[in-house]
Length: 90
Image (cartoon, rainbow, N blue to C red; front, side):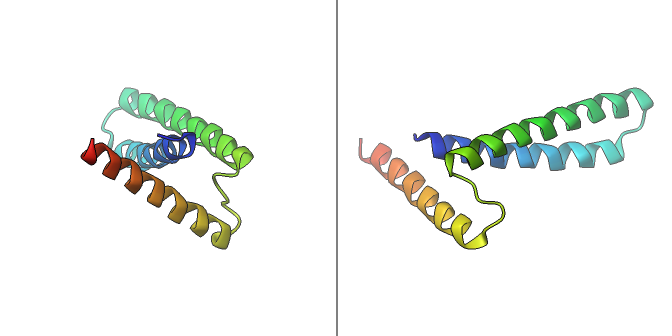
């Protein structure tokens, strides 16, 4: 895999973690659980920021330019598809 594919997958996973943790936080029943989930949410947000910063610096992520990001997303999807096909043929 390429760094770009790995970073993109990590970013998507982290976004999902932020969403799911925030949802769990709103449904938590005890102050102790809320405190722990809040801590995990802030850690996930910090991780997301670090990955985003890395990807922006490398030119893998363009959150302010939809046109540029679309080109990157298509390229990343094609790379992932090619890698999956090459594994199937191995």
